[in-house]
Image (cartoon, rainbow, N blue to C red):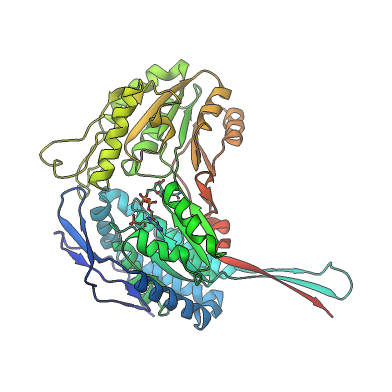
Length: 495
Ligand code: TAP
């Protein structure tokens, strides 16, 4: 198959996109019940989706089940699956700007960031294509005379994928290509308001040669579609990314059957800045860590822990830089920070800022919704820094998921570690220090699935990510992420 690699230029005007579910290799007509997505930046309706029913979800699960139990995909050679995944990556290259544009319009994030999400998703697909080639088992020949043991890796079955609204494409692609590489089939349920890129990927997967029924998408409400995926006895693995609260509901709903769960839940990362850090780099790192994607990021470095000795000068530099960030329309190439996802979330973020102040915090920059003529129709919040946040403040303990940085000073390394670990979450933390002893010993003591040293919100397809404590369990990406979609079978032979 030839893949057209010319990058396509999307229309400059926003047009309403309408979609049906994607089941059994084709798009369904839109049902009677639909969901409109209003741009969080302008209020304009940008997409209309079907609101899926339990019956439609069951149909999609059946399509995936049939494709797994009776279809060719799980039995193809790794090389054949790898070729299909590489074609999918090429098609994503071809539709690069279209995918980025949909993502920016639906989430409210700057187009520049959305392009990064598409680039990252292509990288994940290419890496998963390589894993399809290397999937293998072990042979044991030291079991005693006449005995041989084979430990094989097989596709785990039908995978349910439930994703949130902050990185709709990237978080899907932390799951889908890995599951497909392993030989699994899947049903995805994207967040209700940001389903566009997931449906576009379903079409591209078919174009790339993924057989009918191997990848299905049902859009609509979590409490209907997601709940059915969690309850269904025909789903073997449920891979969930979202809040800790919904994660708990899914664990409960899955309780009646023994499906494997991979839970990527909430976070409240700390960024620890030691006096021996490269201060200029640390300022940029802290800013990026907290304001990237409007702070709507599970690994957002939302808590700054800064050594008392450098705190005042560090904060002065931070505030000066934060005030130069451009909050603006997602499609404006100069925007650094876009709109929050919806009105309810805007209220949650603003309420946290108010509550934090009532509990003693001081706003040193930002702290309010932006009300200029060009931003008034959307949910834009100024980059906010709260100083003097003590560890009992809800802003320190709870996930705000917005452009809000809390600042807490520390006096000793032990105090920094204890403050960083003093939350229920354990997804990621960041350390800025030029002293390798400090950086490594603190890194070892932090209770989180990822620790970044002198870099932040970084990563590569080879590196697994995931949480400890109430940030969940299971890993995505890397070999460990791939293994989540495989089952081990032991075959013992006596000859
Ligand atoms: P949630 O409200 O938890 O929603 C996540 C997904 O679950 C959505 O598709 C949602 O559908 C669905 N859902 C809701 N109720 C459900 C139910 N009863 N059964 C099954 N599915 C259900 O999260 P969100 O607000 O979209 O995203 C923000 C959260 O995600 C934050 O806590 C953030 O930390 C977390 N997150 C974690 C990670 C990682 S890697 N750990 C990455 C990104 C985000 P609807 O469309 O109906 O809401």
